[in-house]
Image (cartoon, rainbow, N blue to C red; front, side, top):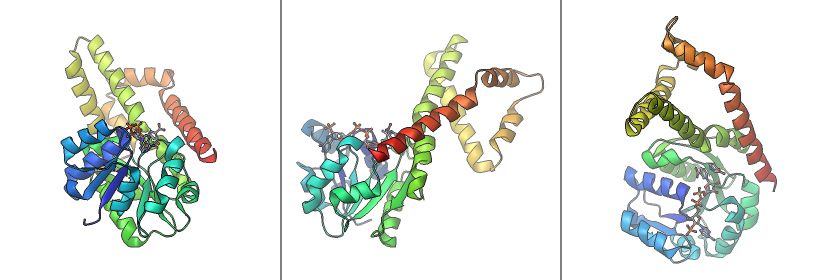
Length: 269
Ligand SMILES: NC(=O)C1=CN([C@@H]2O[C@H](COP(=O)(O)OP(=O)(O)OC[C@H]3O[C@@H](n4cnc5c(N)ncnc54)[C@H](OP(=O)(O)O)[C@@H]3O)[C@@H](O)[C@H]2O)C=CC1
Ligand SMILES: O=C(O)[C@@H]1CCC=N1
């Protein structure tokens, strides 16, 4: 891709996208500009990846054709209104901020701007990201394909309507946190059973990854895949019984419902 890429804010999520993008080889580091307020962090990113260290958000706006705004939701509108006058006419602005709507973004940066609202997740860092993409009316097919290509260079990406972003946050943007908790808990149990901790993480994580791959690749219902593991009178069904007794599935559903409510509440504030 020959478009120049910018990052304003490059913390957990920005780094995941930046690392995924550079590792994919789709964009050379010399084509990327990054700004965060801590100069030492930009320098560290420059040393690690060879990207251009920008001295201000305005510099990123001037240089880049596609700009990722990866700052916290509570400051994004201010950050964008500050760079408004520095942006190129055709610049594509990609916000990853949870709960900040296309309309709010346009109010900050101008209703004549090309804007994409995306919801990625941190597994982007290891080329296994899942991202939703929602465009405003000014985004062309070429812009959309370029942004999809960027997100697909380190995982999967799908176009969704803006209303669908709340479930996306619940099931994908935030969900690595719950999956890590699940892996940690499984490993704790293995440690309880006598397994060394590092080995327990390897077994737990590989089991989660393999199970996810089975869902994606076999096309079978997760319940049917679960049934394949449960031998009659065997070990697995004992575990399944306890998980049902403890409300495992309803705990997950309620947690994600709460997450979606927060996403909706953020959009209103
Ligand atoms: N973490 C996740 O899994 C996901 C996060 N998101 C969204 O990504 C966004 C960023 O989250 P996350 O990466 O976790 O947050 P972090 O706190 O890790 O990163 C925030 C970044 O913003 C920078 N920053 C702070 N103030 C400014 C400013 N005034 N101008 C420019 N940059 C600034 C910080 O720089 P410095 O360190 O120098 O202060 C840092 O690089 C949020 O809007 C969140 O909703 C979306 C999907 C998943
Ligand atoms: O917790 C958050 O608000 C962000 C959005 C999705 C993942 N992390």
